[in-house]
Image (cartoon, rainbow, N blue to C red; front, side):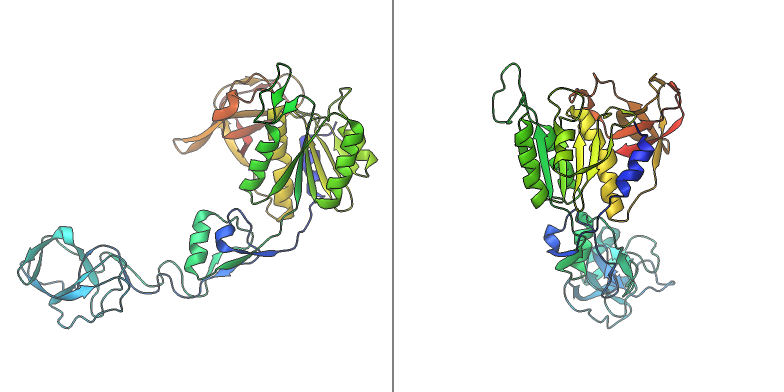
Length: 393
């Protein structure tokens, strides 16, 4: 068996580069930007009013009971008006351009309305409630870096920049193959000896969260049918994810079937728990991740290895994140132990509280987990207050 570190290194070496594609910005969620994106003008593009109120020309020694005579209304979406008298005012709405000749906004809440204008009820400072032109970004400033994962907020920025289509990194065509005669469709009522399929849906959801679409298939425990299905998927897909059939049981046909269709084994079995039987291989242009069938083994292997591979493909290997263990853990096998738990910030530090589960087949207990802690194989006792690497889930 190889170590987790060796497995990650080998996975990285099979990274692929997929051609960039152009997509409508509204369909770009979770995609990766292929180029830097620059602003087309200053943002905001004008001195912007940030509170409903009146726009005035500030004068330090103005009398407290001064009446600002109203000259008009500055509406959002309209060109800037001109203040004709520096002792007057213009009503100005949030989002409107600051009227010419004005330098301060006073909120309506801080004013008294009189017959022909307003009286200020508070001490004021010059420049209040104005978002200056170019304060967020000057024209031709880099707004979004190449390699950024597009979020809802990113889409908002792209739309504001007038970008209706965005070039993003291409992604592989992925097939997910679930295996096992014990699996039935989620709409079926399982017999006492059967279970509903779930791993393939979990993997599909994880892929969707990083912008990758997949096709789902099921394969029964028949080596010839499995080989036929592998031949077909290897012709049509760049990446194959397989769940189940990779251990040492008499019906675990996946490793031999992959070898028979020309996929080179890079490694089989890692010194870790859960997920020890994980099989990984590649052909000239395809990559295959064959995960154990137990739900948590499958989930953890995908989070640790596939997502590491995908970051390597995108040149985005991130720095590890560590958290403080909240309680002692004892684990005697000399294996890397992946522990599910809850990571949260307490008093400015990131802590991790393990969750008690009933093994890698338990998919109910870990529902509250948001992270996986990596405990190294060099000891049996992992003490409270020690730092260890985590992976967010």
